[in-house]
Image 1 (cartoon, rainbow, N blue to C red):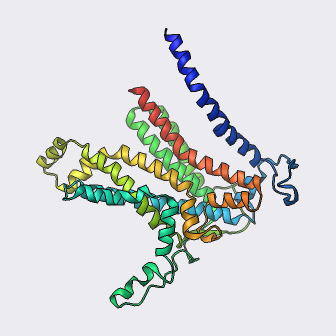
Image 2 (tube, one colour):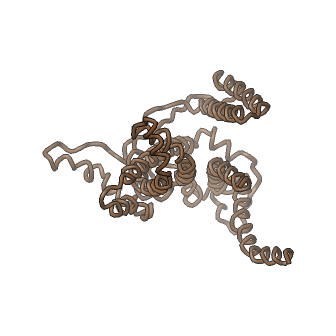
Amino acid sequence: MRSNDRLVAFLMLLPSLVLLAIFVYGFIGRTAWVSLSNWGSDPTQALALDPQIAFAGLANYRKLFTGIIDVRFRQDLVNTFFFTLFFLVGTLGLGLGLAILLDQKVRMEGLFRTIFLFPFALAFIVTGTVWRWMLQPQGGVNVLPELVGLPPLEFRWLTTRQQIWQFDWNSVPAFLAGAAAVTLAFMAWRAWRRGTRVRAGVQAAWTVGLGGWAVAGTPGVTLLPYPEMHGFNVAFVGIVIAAVWQMSGYTMALYLAGLRGVPEELREAARVDGASEFGVYRHVVLPLLGPITLSAMIILGHISLKIFDLIWAMAGSDNATTDVPALLMYLRSFRANAFAEGAAIAMVLLIMVATVIVPYLRSSLRGEVRR
């Protein structure tokens, strides 16, 4: 009887598994193969019925990360890093603040909750269109001071080419090695607290090695024979504001549900022990919201890495200052017909997203198995 149930369950899942294998993993495999070819290097036969495609190995990836012409892709990666950083900090901070305010049992809480959550119901293309109107250099928020008799602002929100916090692209390996060393140090600390001394020792040894390699400037790794400066494009400020405005209601809902799940007895016990209201949130409430924060960071990080429609609507497709890898992938693939290069960008995006998603899914599945 049990074997029949398993057979029925397998047959029920089989159509979904076949479709998943073809339209997800099959297309990923096809994209990976195209990224290792030279499809599109010859514009005269890129769209031919039977294009002549040859294996090119990692040439497309080398061009993206070390080629002289593909400096735009490298700036796009820097744009994505800064956008993700400010998007996460702004969305989580504003969402938590709104949730704490609503948790104070304010009057008309339902109305405020609906107002704060409403932007999340909009599509990014709608949000981008509205905020593009608001951030016009000759209108929108720039003319608001005129309402009180002050001169208008002159900030060129989405068109400025000003960069801050610049660094040399050749320093990226050292940054990555340093980040890996910090991550391993944290893992070693956790392993030591759990009592797994051998694992902690191995991770600590790797930490020392990677840290020393990063401090030494990653000797033996040379990306470019000349300095190439990249930084945070100030034009992204408006895009970050629009993205935070839309997604902060989502994090507010997550945090508010978590706050309502904290037992009142824990808060009262902390107050009896002499904790102030700030101390109650710092030492009792916020630690209990850790899993919610992690889940929100994973989801928001995934959104930020593949952001496309918001930037298209706000800044257009040809504004290199506000470009991101997903937008460049579209331009390379469907305007320049450089399908191999576009596929290589797509695979880089896939790896970046997998780096964020896979560890979270792995830890979640481990937690379910332990239960």
